[in-house]
Image (cartoon, rainbow over all chains, first blue to last red):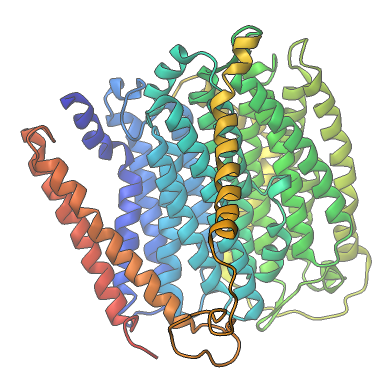
Length: 504
Length: 128
């Protein structure tokens, strides 16, 4: 008994970066009562994330080796979690950069405090080793997201978008919790390791399968996977572009790493039918395959009809959820490329290209008026050539065309699903379906590029330069281009993390 | 296969029990309640103030703020009871860990006070 208490209390050592971020966030909330210049807040936020990253880099150095062994603690560090938290911090710093000059001085303190705690919550989700700490992290992420969405745009449509997201997100949390409580009913534990041990002896218990479906449903909302996608276009179009950028990347990073975590560390241990020797996880993966197919198809078909660029990007983000779900469904079964590695590779690529596109769009503005419709971008290549180039690179990468990182992402996902062993025909169909959908997607992405490059300019846009946002956009674009030529840099890191080696 | 399927029994029973409860309560209300409608009895609040206008008013958003604040501080106070019971019961926390738990609760209360001060300074308690 003493040992378990000890491990729970010692867990704080494993989440030092997140604790740093949370303390910084609390300090910023208190500090926001003082009159401080606006630029202080993003600086503090970026500083806290940098401190967190330093602790994260040092983490595998000073942690004792036995802390990598699965234990009953609330949090745990292992190589893939280490990499996942790295993705979270990198995404967070890009979001801070892009929001740097976009928030009014009156609310800048709260905005960046919430952004900091959002990053901390996402890190906690990835590091979780217990259903309670997983839910804690998910709720920190959700609560911060509501405030961030509300502060960034406070007119009627912004409020509507925030309320829609708020209500649906609470609903999805309830679904997730219902699934968790069913699992608790079956095994009476919340720790992953203890649940695994219980499940091995449990045999066939339908509660486990049903709880898995609810958990996937609750997390599927965050990913905007198809039956749970209705909010995405409304919220993306209604909120400020920095809110849309945040919703496009952060919930996906959190959701995919959380689903991967519960699938491999909980449900992989359960048996659905003893007689036929079917695993719960294989049934859940079948569900995920269906979600993947539906998300790809409906996301792409929806995007074909959009004139509003943000609605288009929302549907495109639904389609990308579908592509990444293919990787999740392929799992570790692929012979050349393991599905989860392809998924994490694509996740990193998706963050870079999304930040490039969304922050690029943020710079297409006339005073406070931002470009909303595709036609407003016409002739951007003449009036703002660099900006148009950044947008074009991002859109090409979302399409999956060379010379961009998105190309390798799609190739790896395709290979992971195609090379699944015999007896898995679903995955081969899914791979073909992915290729077909990438082709459908090309139509609407290339249409936007065509509008920018082939038409005459109709409007002029501000020449004022928002340096931090440009920096974020530049990092996204340049990394998307450069990593196409050296994909091994990122792929090697991912492959090493999943084969059990820590470090870049 | 029969044993495989029988594992689903509890779940099926659970669904049936929910349905039975909902339908049962509705049916019971219809069976037991004497059907004697009168104008006064049909009012939303039988012994309250006479309602003026439509019942579907828009409530002031300030009530929502009060509800949220109440929930926050009330639930956080409730959290102290299980701690006090669990930490100092005879078969509760090991003695060696009681100091750590006490420190933890102090940190928790400190965070609560920060939240309180923030709320106060931002004017969250002002009715405006």
